[in-house]
Amino acid sequence: MTDRDEPETYVDLDELRAAKAALRRPMRERRAEIAAAAPDAGSRVAALVAASFAPAGGTVVAGYWPMRDELDPRPTLSELSARGCRIALPVVAAPGEPLVFRAWDEDEPLEPGPYGTMQPGEAADVVEPQLLLIPMLAFDRAGRRLGYGGGFYDRTLAGLRGRFAVQAIGIAYAGQEVDSVPAGPEDARLDGVVTERAYLDFTE
Ligand SMILES: Nc1nc2c(c(=O)[nH]1)N(C=O)[C@@H](CNc1ccc(C(=O)N[C@@H](CCC(=O)O)C(=O)O)cc1)CN2
Ligand SMILES: Nc1ncnc2c1ncn2[C@@H]1O[C@H](COP(=O)(O)OP(=O)(O)OP(=O)(O)O)[C@@H](O)[C@H]1O
Image 1 (cartoon, rainbow, N blue to C red):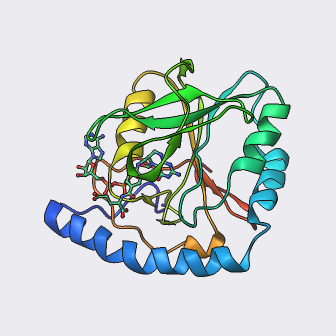
Image 2 (cartoon, helix red, strand yellow):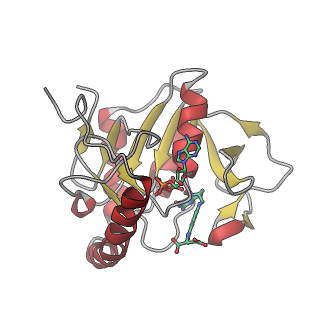
């Protein structure tokens, strides 16, 4: 039996919150160190995505605009756009709500959004992604993920998966892997992670 079948989940939500908060601080520092030492990670990830699971033309792909030391997904988004995918970026509608996705072409300007994000303007089409490329602070081999704590991707994936099949792929440095990310019942699992070294498929 794999980790994916039998996750270790927290029952006490205060304990879970504290365990996640405790992991965020060191993982922010670790990610900053790795990012400084791996400037070509974005193009490596783009090559791995193209080689391992490039989606069909026409697929709506949600990326993200990198903030802090997140692995830069823009080379991947360019590659997928060139293959005929439609690219979208997340927009925070409100705290406690799922993300909304707006279509975006790489030459189009972005506007500042909440929490230091950059997002397409209101004129952009709202779209529903079939593939989501998701940033994070840490992940484990069971597909559990640690973000900044807003629960945005958890709510978003729960909503989308309730209606149609979506693929959730994390984008992270290999050094962001930990043995076990603390998780509760609401934490949505990733189907895989692409690092600068490899594509890790958690659905196998
Ligand atoms: N590049 C990028 N875009 C993204 C996300 C992301 O993680 N990365 N998001 C992923 O959800 C959504 C934005 N959500 C975010 C939620 C919180 C913070 C943040 O910086 N939080 C503060 C704490 C804020 C507070 O508690 O008041 C922090 O971590 O210091 C950033 C983005 C959508 N866009
Ligand atoms: N499906 C959901 N429905 C409602 N609330 C949710 C859902 N998933 C998570 N939450 C709430 O969101 C809050 C933060 O979750 P968590 O700490 O896992 O965020 P995160 O995954 O680190 O952040 P993000 O996804 O924004 O990067 C928690 O209080 C949790 O209860």
